[in-house]
Structure formats: C-alpha cells, structure tokens
Length: 504
Image 1 (cartoon, rainbow, N blue to C red):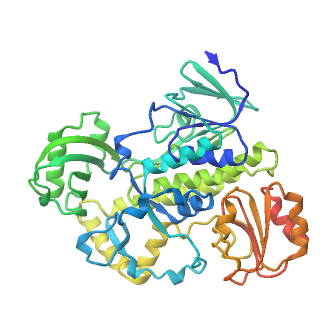
Image 2: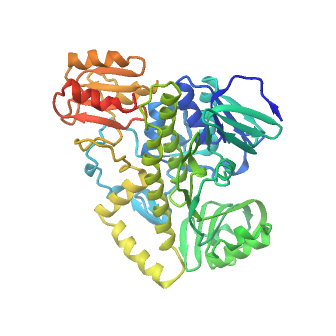
Image 3: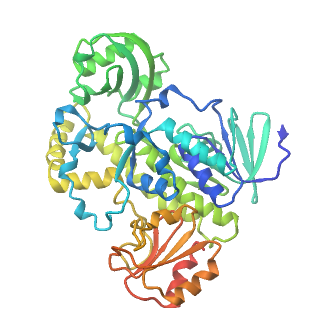
C-alpha cells in the first residue's frame, strides 16, 4: 500500500457528484484543504444529458446557489420551458406535481408565505445534472480543491485524530471523511452505518429509443391502470412498472423486447420500439441512515438517504446536506466551533430527509394500480385543485416550509433568511458569497457593531434600513442562510452573546 507523500487533508470527500462538489466548495471557501476521490474516470455520462439529467431545483437550493454567487452561472433554466408543462392541462402552467397530479401555478396563494419578499429568488427552476456538475467543478477547482477521478474508495480506518482512506493501491489521510458516493455508498458500508427503510413497489425505467409510432403515446405524465409512463419528447420515456422492483433486482439485461413489452403493457398501446439506445432501471426503495455520523465520518446525499425520484427532491435534499455540513465542519477544523456543533448536522438534516422519504412513499401509495390507491388518488386530485391544496403541495414540493427546530421566540428563527433589500439596493443574499455569519442591524446599534468586531474574522456586520424589514430590528444569520436569532426590538449584550455563542 502506497501512502501519498502529502500533508494530511482537512477533508476527503468520496464522490464528485453535485453534493460532493458543493460540499467541497463550502469547505474550500472556508480555507480548508479538500480532496475529492471519484470512482468514474470521466465526468461525462449519457444519463446526465438532457432530458434524463433534468432536475427541478427547489427554493432552498436556488437560495444556496444564489448566496454563493453560482446561480447566474446556470443557463439552462433560461432556455427551457417548465418540464412539468403538460399540453393536456391547457394554457395554465403547472407548478409541479404530486404522484402525477399537477398543481397549477395560478392556484397557488403565495401571500400565505409571509416571509418571501419581492426581492427573493424564484421558488423553482430547472437545471441539468451535467451543467450543475460543470459549474460546481469549475468553482471547486478555482478554490484549489483537488479532484482525483478514477480513484474509487475501497476501504478506510479511523482513529481519534484522523482517517486513513484507501483507493486501490493508494492511501490518503484526512482529519475527516464524508461519503457523498451515492446509493451504493462504499463509505456507508465500510463505516457500518445502519441503512433502514422500506422495499420497492416498482421498477422504473429511463429510456432513450427510436419509437416507430410515438403518436400512440401521450405527451407528459400518464398514470394508467397498470403503472405510469411519461414521454417528455419523442424517444425519451420514463416508465413505472409495479412489479415490486423484481426486474431491477433480477440482474437481467435490459433489451429492446423487454422495454417494448413493459411499455405496451403499462401504456395499453401496441407501440413499437425500433431501436433501443440507452436504458437504465431504478426503484422507489426508501432507506435512510439512522445516523449521519460515525465519529470522523459523515454521510451526505444519496449515501445518507435514497427514495423514489418522484418530485425530484433527491438532489435538493443532498445539496441541503452539503450546505448544512460545510460550515460546521469548517468551523470545527479551525477550532472555532462550539462543543456539539457537528452533532447538529444529524439533528437538523435527518428529520428533513425523513420527511422527503415519506413524501415519496405517499406518492407511490396513490399511484398503485389497485382500487384503493385509485380512490385515494381521486381525493388527492380534488384537494390539489383547491387554492389551499395547491399552496400546500407547492410549499412542500418547492421546500418553502423547510426549517430547523432552533430555540428562539421569534417565528423566523430556524427559517431561511428573507432576501432583504437594503436602501442602497444591496440584497442580503449578495452579501453571503464569502460564507461568513452576518449580524444584520436595521437600527444602527453601536453596541452590536462593537460586539461584532470580536468576531470580525468570521462574522460580517451589516447596518442599514431595508425597504421591507418585516418589523425586525436584529437578525443573526448563519453561513448557510438560516436565521439563528432574530428580534423585533433592541437587544441586550447578554442576549446577543448567548445567540452567537453556538457556532461561533
């Protein structure tokens, strides 16, 4: 075994997908040394290309990219129409769907979201895996993150002070290891993490093929008596076959004849596939690590939780993990974290992951091809077509209601900070590119300015009135954009010190 002749890295990350790359960017932004080990030789993959690679970005993800100055680098959403748009629904655009039931944008009552300001980012956008990885790779490399492709982690061991990671014949040392290596995570398996959950109801297929008679298949998402199929454009088809995941686990090759048989059965047509180009299978198996941490090893993204891609929340969930873990790990590395800070990663992110898994399971439950599911589906359809119903489903699908259970009296505590626009036109999100804490003082309190000076290497003091400040006087914002503390009135020095003690 050959050990690399280098200084110990602060963090080794397994996996150079969007989650691993974003976490690396967060750590490197905070001046940590980071090495990413990726098993694939090349970044390109046919299944990351359009339309397979299209993903819907939710509000927390959009905010995170905006707060790090990355949102403007994504161009695809400016060129493509909403992928949820279905011609059968008429001219009113879809805002998304639940189990294939669309909620329409015109039915959503955004006034119920009291803290979303006119200056806020959009609630949902579309992107593509390849584009997102390209943008994040470029940013990571600009921050001196080392990325070694073709280096699959095969084993690791840890002591009280470091982790030794093995990739084939090479060995690397780090203070911390994070597994962002997907649903079959080696880090999770070697680390002995318990991965609890439920077994699948269906085998899903992603297919690129030449279809001789595509007009026989309706465009958009179609829930049938035998499953679901979606034709986003001729030749690109997604299929759900409720076989309990049998074919996915069978190991049988995916042939043209098999895809044609499944598509004909699910769509109840005699459609013909003339040539099969690409096909892969997946399931709705839902599992979550019971703990996201084992001493010096963490899990994030699909390594920590897997579920059906219905609703497209997996990528968003993983990027949220990275945004949450990055600043906490960096603070610990720089010896500026309070005791127990790293434990809040699991405490804050595990419940969010559990909610997403249940959201996915609920969709599968009302898509089954049986009378009970069809009865439930009809009731959900009625509910989602009401104004309150559409607003509820949009808030869940777009992540509007994402929050952490912080201690604090103000209702904004634990929520994402509104994108306050100061009187000079500066927006709070634009002040977060460096990943520092922000003490936002709307009333120019000299005490707060003096106090913030004690943390000037980690915290930014911002003073000034906002065009709409929601009655607030003081807001303390974490590096991930979550509100750690807020007040409608002037605060004492003691209360401010208590508020910033955790994490600084």
